[in-house]
Image 1: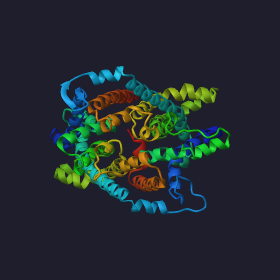
Image 2 (image 1 turned 135 degrees about the vertical axis):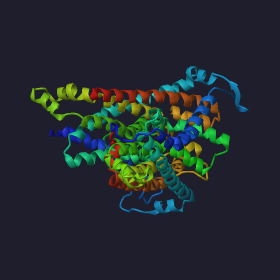
Image 3 (image 1 turned 90 degrees about the vertical axis):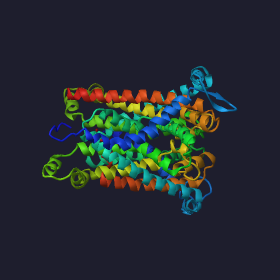
Length: 287
Length: 264
């Protein structure tokens, strides 16, 4: 970026015009419309009327029904994030210590499922966790007995961890790549135990990676739709599936819009925090 | 080089099994000869694959998805190449803000975009239109092309371009003969990544597809909420196979590790 000799021109700006036009029409306009809709009065007989109201937002913070859904989403998001940290961080560490061919082979096995449709992966979990599925067969074999797992929070969290784990492994792996293995080696040769070396030397250095991975996982898990839609059933609603119901079943669009706006703002806060973490980390390395 | 202990190897094995289990089971169940979701025993059958190809809805939605992914990936790359050029080469105010805007679909839940577009489409009468659906897909996949292209454009020696310019080549010639060949891996890698992401997109599409434009993931989602039979497994197995083939191609062209892990 620093080659000042290159002919940097102001006129290049017009090259962004087609994309800018597309994003104005297909992103900024619809989001503004939704924001406006969320303040619209709603009448069961006539739908969205023109009048201004804050009642949808008031309902979300006062009505126990919506509060429960938001709390459930928060809880599922946090548990998923915690599990991704507990599984993803050691896995990234183990991968980074593998010998040459295995390292990239296993890294790809862990990351490539990211490219397979979420619907396919969720369907796979619904078969694995089904009442006649392999997991239940295993449970019977070791004497736990058949357990109904579908349409429970456990099933939703399991599939979410599966889908989100790559997003945890990637930033931690990247942080580990920048780490000098000799520092850990030095700690070991000065008599630190393996655990001390990991906790005192490795962990502090990869903390920003864990933090940004955790924020991404939380943001994606809390706004996930297909997984709770297919594995949660009708009763176990999360924020995203509630928005879907408001729009396509209840036909209360203003209410759905208000929930969607809250989801969007919460998500932007989480993701921008993540961005700040990465930036600060980058600046510290330069400075 | 430090070695992993046996506990670490066991941990890795369990994680790998966890990651592969749902994909392996759909591929196995797809070959069952039974009428229920069950693992095939000694006899394997292709009857459910045949069922898929005889099911008009799945065939239509599959063709829709292929079309949609091809059109929107091409449009996204076509828009992202000039925009990334301007962002990496230009020197105008608001470059960073523009880059932020073009990457923003990565941090906007697809569900929110879906309901927002549903409302807009209803108002302008665009519901069920393939073109508008494709434009919506272009917005959500553009960031993937953009990230690869910006990395490709900042990561190479530009003295050749300067030489060509100072020898009197026109800007267009420089782009066609020098810049484009240099960023080609980024262009083709970006196209494939866009294709996969458009092909897989379900959460936004569920709100803005009509029966005539329904995509395969949306069709599968709808089907899975109503009934579950081995045909779902057969469709899933086909998707796993298609994704694996695309991933291999992506690996050849750009390097799967660079696409997934990223270099920024």
